[in-house]
Image 1: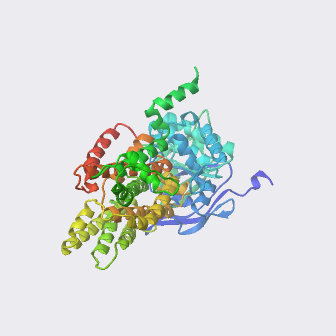
Image 2 (image 1 turned 30 degrees about the horizontal axis):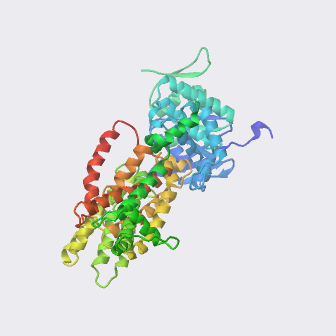
Image 3 (image 1 turned 90 degrees about the vertical axis):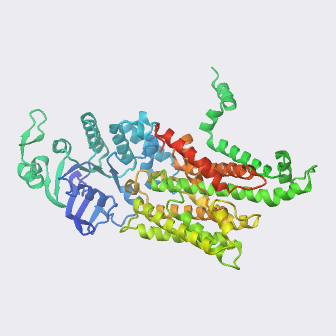
Length: 264
Length: 354
């Protein structure tokens, strides 16, 4: 089969969800191919986190379907779902007393029995994930003792250990300083291409999205407003509509990346 | 340098080092020591050597002849031994369920009293006691029903949509717990004959003696404690919050129900036989956590063993300090436990152990 002939790994079909009476997602349809990073942007309350919650089964969809490798996952049990889809949350709520290694091993929860005794394969996967995210030297340190950037890499390692084809990241560079932001995004990019993962990543910084994502999805008021390449989506018109902010766009003289600058 | 020689030297000499690396051995030795001390000490002191011989003689495989008075055997086998085992199991149940509730609620102050289970179990026990013509053997069953009934009401009240947020669970638990305590006091006041018994009960004094209650209690204790120890891994995953736990593949609602039922079972068993004993469920898991960390796969079994040690030692103090009188053990645990807990809190500010 030709590479381009493969169907998308993650397929979202008219997905809707409510918080009580509030419609938080209104008929979102979206595909993510293998090895592709799709950046998810939109103003606060646009539905980015809600979409991640619905995809990961924390919030129930009111209608629509989610297919991963052509299988409907809305009816999956938590452990079945965790084997097909892993989430990298923001490094805020952490069991600070756990060591880095213990935390990464929890990524294997979906494969372990009720007693949680790891097999050789689980230990191997966790060690590999720590190596890939460059936290293997911290294995015995407690989460509370390491920096925010390192914590975020531990959460990335935990998600990698889950061994799922789809990876969701929820604003992973929030609360990190610039050095760690750049480092983390480079790491994500390298791993996605290397492991051929399908990634949906919610982000705030539009220039980071432009530099990292293959395609960009713009959400506003729970609706999908635009989808396409960074140049196609990050236009002054789209941004004004969604964020009520005026921007100008440029092309970076060295990298040829699309860049955005707000206008007073 | 010969490293194995050094290690050997260390296992013999470095008690502290040994405590760090072999927690189960250390705490089991402590438990054995406390058990022996508990059957030896009391209003009549039986030398520990003799106590051990009498114990072994009661088994079919051993025969010791000794020069101890015959009433030693009666005191030891009919009174102290069942009492000691009951106290040990009660301490184990309180500390084990305390550790589990703390893990479930991710709150260092959680214990069986916080979510109303203990008060509900106490009410169930008092109701059975206040019905005339009902045997004592129904008390634990009443406590179990009281505890489960309380948690069912609390759980229903706390439920928002499909989820049970922990804050509403604790709020509902405190409210229902207070209501149950008030009903308990009311029942005590209208019933003159049982006021002394109930008073003793509420202060954490044993209301029963002999082997019979122990035999009735054993199924509750053993089922509850086994389930609690099995839940360790799930509690580890829950430490990252319910949302992340679910995303990691844990069936969160099912696990919460499992922990609540097993912890309620153990709490009910503890409360029905030994009354309301505070601070064991709070202090013991904290000590264990400070010494050996917060991995719930180890924390729960270690808390169970440690709870046995602490309550046995408190009970020995309660029986000997005013001998031949008896102080309800709940008074001792609160008198020692509360200041100790404050000391832990001050110390804990300096390091992350939670």
